[in-house]
Image 1 (cartoon, helix red, strand yellow):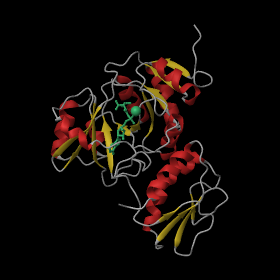
Image 2 (image 1 turned 135 degrees about the vertical axis):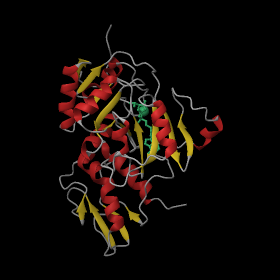
Image 3 (image 1 turned 90 degrees about the vertical axis):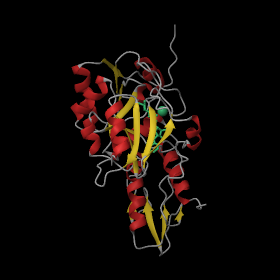
Image 4 (image 1 turned 180 degrees about the horizontal axis):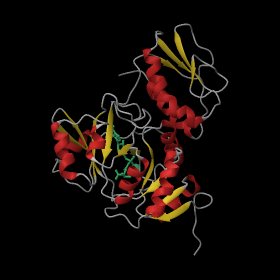
Length: 312
Ligand code: TXA
Ligand code: MG
């Protein structure tokens, strides 16, 4: 039977074990995403503190938007350095971790998580997977790992290594093969704030939250809570006005540049940091150089258009 693949040559596939973990950790250290099984679905994992590595996840998935990514930790202790745990959150972690429950919590004050990982949000989604492959890779890397499902944007989540290979092809360097996943369904996501637990995505863990709670579901990328600078933002600006702080790209220099080399991975990695810097600047408006509408540029432009859209 002829297998039709979306992409070019197949990636390296290694059966889960010490050799696979060591090879994957070397790639993670170089900022290269790897596919790794969890008990829910396979994830495409990279160092959550390295914006460039995270930009490569979005690039591989071909996501037209920067949705915030789930950050995977190996232990509750590791999670405590990344987010603020109010008592209700601590209880959920104690009870369900490791397991298929993701907690959306306020970022800790000096959280090392890259702004691109959370798409600029002041919250972070944390998950402690029960799969030993994900746990081993986090421990071997010594880093929290950002990992969305390892599928191209708009496609179903992979529950076998073969799914990842067929869908991502050479867009992923290494797939750790842990066989079929246990649940085959993404983790339950809840947001915890002010003693209240809200269901954002139903999943394997049923917390008994009423279906009505789902009405508030925040469609990825559409969230009203998405970070937007409090200053007017103008796009496609080759030249800035005197009252504008100019974010450049490529040949357009600006006050500061997303990427002088015109590299979209670098631009994505710097985007949220520069938007925050623009907001802190002494100028009352922001102008951004034209960004090509291709590859990661599509997600960058989407984010910039949202940031520049008039507020309701
Ligand atoms: O089972 C899973 O959760 C898998 C495995 C790989 O861990 N991961 C996964 O990630 O499904 P992903 O990126 O496909 O879905 C993450 C969801 C997105 O819908 C995103 O909007 C939401 O989590 N999310 C992440 N951070 C968030 C935040 N700070 N606030 C609200 N939603 C958030
Ligand atoms: Mg997904």
